[in-house]
Length: 162
Image (cartoon, rainbow, N blue to C red; front, side, top):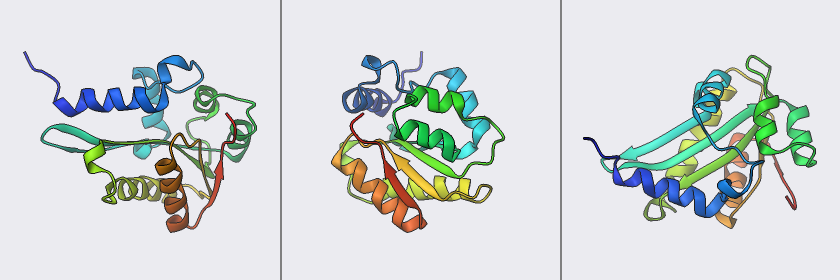
């Protein structure tokens, strides 16, 4: 019988602690159906860095349209609806940095930023992305988004008072 690598459960616990997705039905909880849609939107939507203990960083980005982004930023739709309204095959011009989760001992080393930049640049190879947007849950997440937007030469928009 195989046991999951120790980091996997730590990552799930961290996501629960920071984002409290189980208590917010409007947030995305990645299941098999959503996973398939995300991969169809773009293969770079989900990125992972791992070591022998399993995942140490998980990134979730969602390329979408300006209209969907604005509906989300104006609180007209939930995060879950953002994913539902993002259609596979659309021409995307915005990217939602949905989550960047890093185990504590790997923070501050630049690896999360590097993984974000790689994923976003991959999307930019096929879509004219102009805007990065974020719903910051932590000061570090907000700083990461600012650094990534600056390095990609994108405007950064933030959800306020959600």
